[in-house]
Length: 170
Image 1 (cartoon, rainbow, N blue to C red):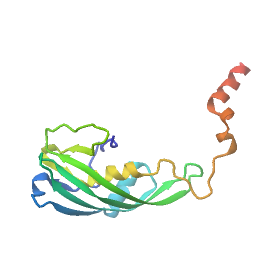
Image 2: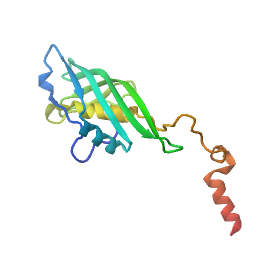
Image 3: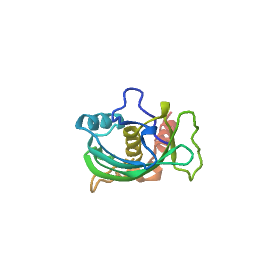
Image 4: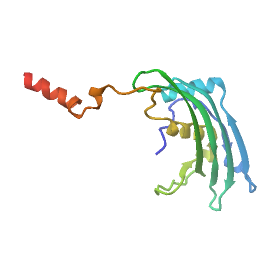
């Protein structure tokens, strides 16, 4: 399931009416500005998005949808989950999805590509790329050599063990 769309203005917006794809398809190159990268970093709760670019190929499908294939590349900085040190990372991710005309419900099969309903038959390609970047971020970034303290990895020293110890004192 894609991350929740932003509630405010979209940080990296590249609207494209589905009707402009045409029978021959089209290729779109998207590059985020420095301000858009900073706004995306705030949205994702990470230290930085240094660069974000994507190349997308859009092809009309027989059923009126538009098939999107492509690749995103980004340079991001996240905080190490152990030390909070900055962890620079490169993200390279393939993108495959279908853009649906307004009023069409997305299919939810496990093997189906993501389907995105486009209000007023306008797709926001920037938001598609931003959501794919959010999904590709490392959920547990670690700085080189960073390890959890020994007591954090010991099964007997978990939060429940600490609560049990407090209960015995009472």
